[in-house]
Length: 355
Ligand SMILES: [Mg+2]
Image: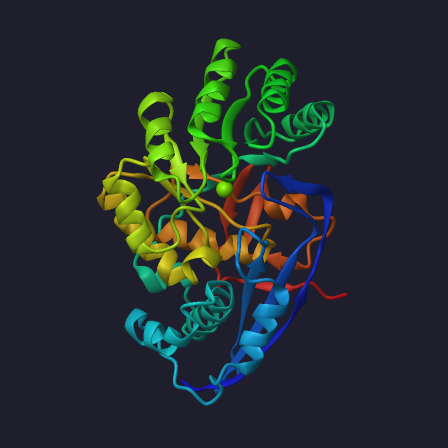
């Protein structure tokens, strides 16, 4: 099939609560909505979600890359090899590539009436239970939010830490007091040294907090520090910022710098790269987390299809649609509290809401 059109527009959605992490703050998403059309008239949608400086690209970069892309008129086919070759010029701009690739895969799978996940093989249809993120805020606010989420059925909290150890300790202990059956996934977004990360783990363990994993405790280049947290922390360590490519994954594994990896479409250039890294992580015996930048239902659905294609994930972190003030899309998945069930309709089965 031939790509007949490719366009990008801002997909900026206000958040209900400022999304504050050790390395960034966001009040409104800064994504591109990528739309393509094939010559048979079938359309595809993709999300190119930026979160600078976690992503090197910002929205303006994504827009410039996609406007300059010489793809209209190109032949597209549902083969990993062919799509990789077609999108090779975008390897240095993984966010833009992820948006384009997702839209192409959405359209190609829609055209044959199959879910996108089926392009990768027979998908698992098990529902996914996601955690919910508590961004860095005043501990009292984090505690209040944890109560609200618990009332909606969420009990696994991804707590953003890494700015100030004592603040983080107070927030986690406070949440545990408010939600006694809480389980924690910590994410420092590179904010700690190994000593600080280990001190936080000890402090919250002493209060009885159950920590399921610790994501990116140290800087992405500090693999020695991450290896120390992995050896001495007593909890699984998940590499996020430290793993963009397959080579990164191999290095992190060889150094014992993590026991798991967080997959994100915009880090790996789209579903194909995320699927490849997820499969390799499984072969290496590593845990898999599936995550997102601050993405809408569109990006989350695409990741849910990748997870289905690799047979599930150890940690599901696909909550960001719940953090938005409005949902520009419908379809893709049905949510029952923290349980997400992809519809597995044709393509991603996500549609823009009529306004
Ligand atoms: Mg992370």
